[in-house]
Length: 219
Image (tube, rainbow, N blue to C red; front, side):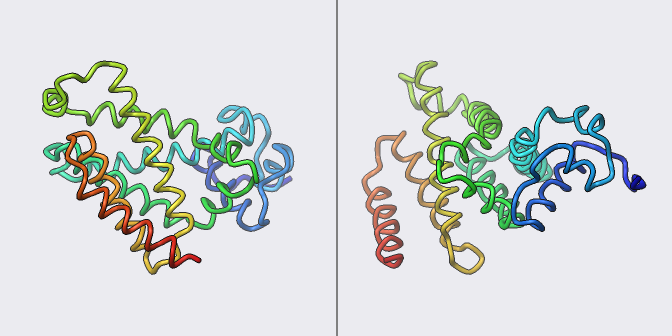
């Protein structure tokens, strides 16, 4: 029987799962196999997770939580406007993804059915939409005089779709240090806010040129 070297926690299980997936080039087949290979019991596993699939969702939840933790370590963060907070979130979140790119790329390209891949982001989606609601300031609501509750939900949903587009761009980005993803983030966030302010034409043209250039170079 294997000797337990470390105290089992949600974080340690996540770490072991990611390592096992990368080392074997496939995710663990069963809870039994996974726990046996890592020297802890199924009972310990089930005290934190119900299924292996729930670990996959937790991984992206932890990326989100770590992002928020890092943002709040910046003493100036609370004074940022809504746009700056969103940009800070994007850059911090994608920096964490880049540090774990091998796993994220394998995870989100695992199934040919993209909907199944996106199911792993269901918890992240909830957290992200809540984050958008939290950074939607009173000044922004006043500026958008006709905004109603259903419109706020539409803004959250639109922000999530924008996030997914950014994630897809990052997964396909082959530039050094993922510099093109940084450009994509800046232009797309700028465009989204200008669309809300009904003065979008210059940003639409600028963002459109960037996307067109990237698509042409990819051919």
